Length: 456
Image (cartoon, rainbow, N blue to C red):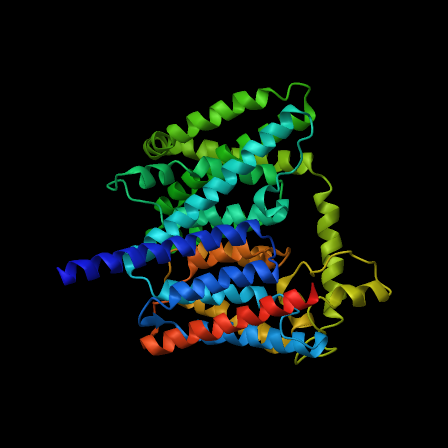
């Protein structure tokens, strides 16, 4: 009897931890870059959940490198502002706690958390699509920013969701509501992605696809790789093309209600997505022909948003400006959020943004070269492992070279959920050590909340 009660309590605790982790990903998504108080409360809840877990197997390379990046950022903040939480590392600390919690889960729990995180991204896409349609009908539709509040941030978020879906897609033998929904989620993610018109996200998507294609070529030979790549491109062209058509209908025609017809087509496409996959497998020539539409979709996207070329050139100029500040303080950088002030006073054009649209340059400028070195260790560690979603990480890495998705906690928490492999190649940490780490993180969040209240 006692054993049954103990087993029931453990089951409740396990589901509670999963629920808390998923709710944290959701909260971080709607929080944008994150306010210290809100993220601090979220982090405290995660730490409390972590104290209920025991020993964990953790990749110390990742744990130490991530902790080093966060500590360096806090020190840079202290030098700049006189307190530890004046920069973005104060809020990014929640990612370390999420990583530690993932290390505490068993294999089945971890897979469920990944899939539920992708399902949440599908909810974000559905909410954004509904909002776009509402604005289309009253004539005020624009680029989709959704819950993240920024089209470029939502774009890379959906790209990460698409690759996460690819990596953790349920097999055909799996039944139930969740596997069925996930297998039909792909066109929704792609259509919502198209509505962002985020060129950087499209480039990131292409980079991740190229990584997958090269991997198939190395493992399976050119015939199989070519067929799989054509199927992938055909489905992507269909989903993204529908989104581009929906945007064009809402913005460039006098009949925006036709978006409802396109919505009906999207719903039908989701319902028949598995049959479409079978069709493309049985008729490879059809997949090859449909994949060719990808070029037409790309051309249509550029035609709808021609300013993207000028925007890209401006970002190159921004990067050049940032490089001029890398050696001002190579150890701790010029301080969090200080580049914008420096740019305001220099002879270059004022870019009116808080972040250089190249993450390595931005981190080197504001936090210093050691912080950048810590991030490089994280990148190398991801590629040294055999995780199934390195393509998604490749897409994010590409995006970080031209945009600022790194600072959106929703994107980074989804990346952690779908890419991180905390237990692979990890070292066993005792229950006491794990609890000590959660207590230390909790103390940092309490400090962050207190400082935010004092400054309010």
